[in-house]
Each structure stands twice: as structure tokens, then as C-alpha cells.
Length: 282
Image (cartoon, rainbow, N blue to C red; front, side, top):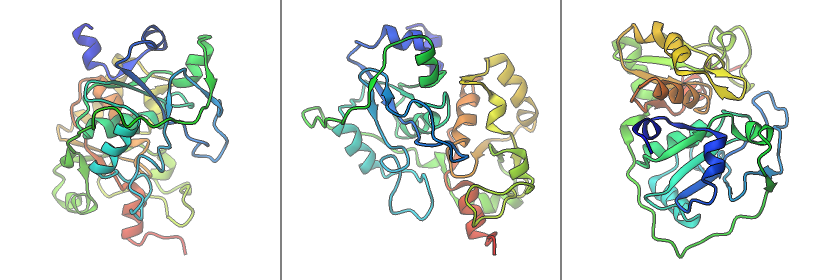
């Protein structure tokens, strides 16, 4: 690979099709069952040949957390990777059935677990199907414990806590970039979690994740640079947030495409902040 291919967190459908038989490539499907609006997501029973289907809301979270989509323990992540045959040198390619939606969250999880060679399929399953590439029916996952035990190292500083967010309201050491829609950020539209009020973390900035996408695809690097320019002009470290830690990772992925290096996400996002601040619908 050329150097640019190592640094670009995206791969194309053409690239993945050419590498389907590469033993180092592990394809992971993290498609959600429904959209944030509650509508059934497309291609429910189709997967890319050889893909391993993971439930991002159950298998890639901490089940003991009171908040959704919380980062799993290092031990839990290692056990899962070992069980599906991922190795230290695997090239992990993640995708979803909405184009780019849940896949950046899986990409971020692998990155903070110190697995550097992980990519997101640009355009996801919708583009794969549009290109006319083969799909198969969703199959039962077979566990393979014969592989070597997978080892990771959690980058704990990438997981920003509620207390750090609260402290930062006064210190403003970093900028919280909120990926939710402007109407939710401004408190003018309800949250999907009906018990929570909408609104925003004081002093945070809004950059809706939809602004960095063009249909199923991530926008070109040049456009992303323009989109991020007002926030980057503040010249402070960035921490990404959203409703529950999913779409924050879409912004984070876009930031990496333009050369950003931070992996910082407020994992509990607005759900934790609003809950712990008592911003509840009575």
C-alpha cells in the first residue's frame, strides 16, 4: 500500500471487492436494525460475503452501564475479537447498511483498543449493492477459538468522562463538538429518548453529522476542511459528542480524513449529561 492508503480511514467498494480473498482482511457488519427515526433499515438480511455480523448495541458495549453504547471493557473486547478470529495484524473493514452511520463507532472502538489497521467502507452496504457486487444471506456466526488470543490496550484518555465535561464548562480547555441536529442542539425539537429534554452542553459547538455526508458517502477532504474551518480556528483540542456516542464518531472519522489525530469522545454524550443534570421531561 501507498502511505496515503495507510492514513486514509476509508476504503472503497472496489478496494474491498479486490481484497475479499485476502486472509488478513476481516469484514465486520455492524448494521442497525432501524434508523434513529425508528424506521427499518435497508438490506436487513444481506451481508457482504465473508462478513461477520456484530450487534453494535449489545456485543460492542458495556451491558452494566446505565447509558447506551458505553465502551466495553478491554477484556470483553479481547474475548470477542478472539472468538471471531481477529488477530493483531488483521485489516479490519467495518460497514453498515445505512452507508456511514454505525460503522464509524466500530472504527473508533478498534482505534481506542489500539488496533490501528481498521477502515470504514465508504458508501457501506448500499453502495456495495448498487455496484452490483455479490451479497449473501445473513448467516450464523461460527466461533473459532483455535486462533491466537487477541490482545489490546485501551486508550483511556480517548474516553472523556462526565466530570471532565462539567469541569470544561468553566475551564474551556477543549471544545465539545456536538453531532446532533441543530434543532435538538438548540432545544427546539425533542430527543429520541422521550424522557430527556433537548438542549446542549454549555459552551459546546454544533456541527450536525449530516453536514459531512453526501448520501451514503463521506464528503471529499476539501469540503470537510471547509466544514471544520470555523471550529479549527478556535485552536483548541476537540472532543466529540452527540446523543449517545454513535454519530459523534462520524464527525471524528471526518476529522481524521482531514488530518486530525484526536480520538476523544464524550462516551455518555447528551444522554448522560442530561440525565445527570436532571434535564428530564416531567
